[in-house]
Length: 146
Image (cartoon, rainbow, N blue to C red; front, side):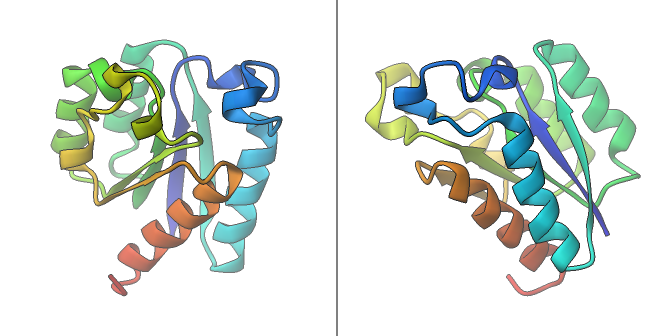
């Protein structure tokens, strides 16, 4: 089994950008956490971070027959991208949406996720731990436990 861990814009700056909101965990820390959870359950992880919306959409299209599911922090595209929403729906992969911060406690424009309706679940506000939870949820789903 193989999953994609995908990150959208500005998440390459984790650990440096707004630590009061996003913490001091780096993207490499998160990738290692997710790989640890996945590997312990016999799954492999492909990692992607991009600041280019089309690159993320292209990756979903290209990997739709390679990976079994996706853990996705789409960053700002969560709230703005109909194209990403449509791509998630089109590739028919199970996707768990994850956010470090509780988007519902932040600016009003962050309260609405355009991708939530085409994801199997959403994990928000648990910081670094949220990625482990999202990975477990995805793997449980893929193994038929949910």
